[in-house]
Image (cartoon, rainbow, N blue to C red; front, side):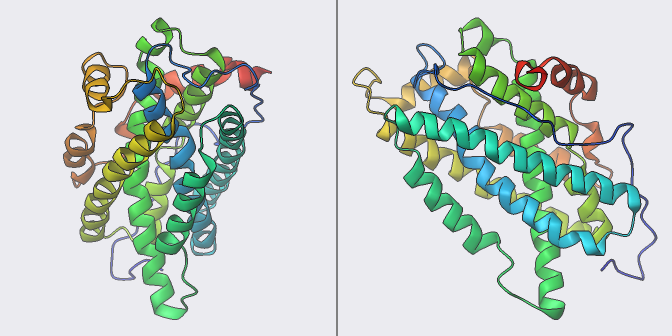
Length: 293
């Protein structure tokens, strides 16, 4: 599928193989506000681990479609490992979603709507021929842009100490850090797959900007929905004030990330291996309670 007139592109491999880990989480004792005293921050975190996986599911399906067009053996191995990791993410977060639903937070109806929307917007649409190829390239460009932000958020989850200091429920803390660590670990896969099947800089710019423009309103709308559906009478009335306070105190990533990260992603020489610390990610994955269990 790559342009025959373009110079050959080589795959930049990392020093280890990506693979799905068998993890187990026990959510039975997790409270609704699992970051104590931080209702809004809890729901921002819910968006990261309950809503975004619907996009990851579509991303894995897109990469599965791209596999027949990837003739680099090492990259095929990485893509296969990525798909396995995203499947494990979906299953683990589904357990958290079922638990929160069972204790009174209506998550299911919203996630179902998001899943429907993702399928309608980012599905294969049954296209064939040239249209199918171009739409596959376009989706891979979009997902490469989205993966940039998930890697940045994953790095934040690994390095932030404030969640632990606030007494975040250990099961949920392990869930989001395990997921964040794997986002850092496979940060290059979608980008490299996109570069292999297309690699056009104009498409990377267009789809990267679109990815940023889609994710920010998704975060805002999803957080507002979950906050509104929170049945706790003590949740407070002014979520905007809680949002600003949580941002200033570093309890949640700053929304400005969706603007400040784009210039880095759009640099012609950018590669995701320049993000985060792979050593930190692998160190956490080696000691994650869920992975060790």
